[in-house]
Amino acid sequence: MSEQEFTVALVAHDRVKPKMVKWFENHLAFFSDCRIVATGTTGSLLRKSLNSNDVVIDALKSGPFGGDQQIGAMIAGEKINALIFFEDVMTPQPHEVDIKALLRLAVLYNIPVACNESSATLLISNPRLRELDQSKSIDLEAEFSEYFSRKV
Image (cartoon, rainbow, N blue to C red; front, side):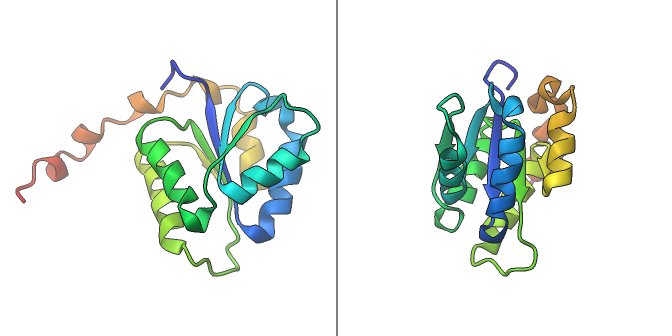
């Protein structure tokens, strides 16, 4: 993963999208040389908040329509370096299983995850963040050898 552009996935549930937009605006300097992918509505709102085209945001599908799964596939394909997900934990989500799957893949593939403003700020403030090479951090076949060698 180290040969590709540093890619950050941004996701926010409806009630916390304004917080994500404000947080993003306050940290534009960090994102100026990143590839940014976001779920659909979040990506659209982040684009609208920008005064220039210096930062490019790839908006995928909306979360309930497959956007979380698209980001999960990118994680499994080792195309995401970090996930920032402002989750609304007080509102039931119709796509809760997709959210759980996304976070599961981030854990499985050893992707740094931040779930609120404080942890997101700490994550991007770490000078070693871009040095992480998640693909070398975990050998899935070795870690889960029993799974891969099971008889089906």
